[in-house]
Image (cartoon, rainbow, N blue to C red; front, side, top):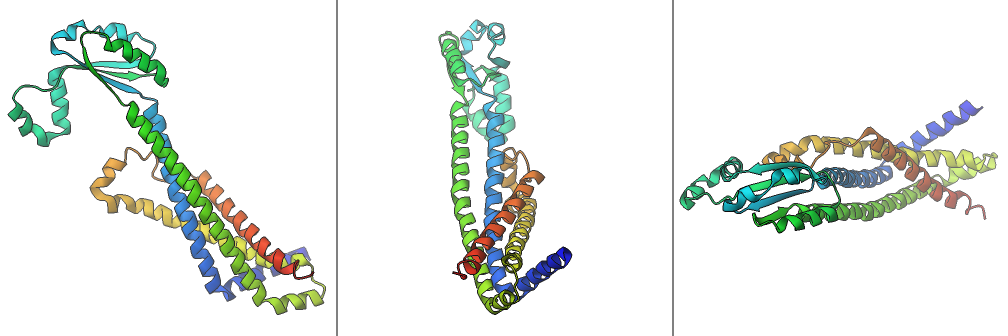
Length: 297
């Protein structure tokens, strides 16, 4: 009996899905669009979070020295500090060489200047992520006569961290709106499907069918919509990621360092699928409950 019941529910759901294909298609498009946008936000949030975490764990400082006083800067003393992970002295010539390697097109400009405009410097990478301690440490370094100027990457880290928060909040805001849109779309689609089967429902009631027997195929219809919509959105998103380097071309190489991954994890997709099933089931049940139970009163 149970096997027969399951077989009926499944067959009736598939039949209902086919008969209302245009309505179901509208719901599918909404679900696909919703989860596709959510995938984009999660992808950006994950990569920017990873980049910020990696970037923020490497506070850096560039200490520019006066050419005449570079010998007065004791690197070994700084190297032994508990905050310092790595320290490197860069001569004026090395600084010029590094600049030309990064910007070869500016070589004629440097020739016109004549003298080497790059001062000697000391590059420090900190092992600590305690910004206050590092700032205090750099403040003491400023008092050394050989130090001309100190540049840090603190502001850049703060801006990237701010961008991460904005993307997360935008994702949360638009994701919530889109999920509610999908929910109410499925509610209305299932309601229309239920009303189109009003006569079938009355016949089933007359022969003594339980509410579950009537509700189950319609709820399963909503679950089908959620699963199919989520799977299509995942497929489209993965294809889009593969095509991204092709469309962005040279610009993609500047974005590549930010991307910790070029895909989303299987675990994330599993949660996405479960969310789609939950939304499909809940929205269908809400619609069917109103139609079946409130119709009894």
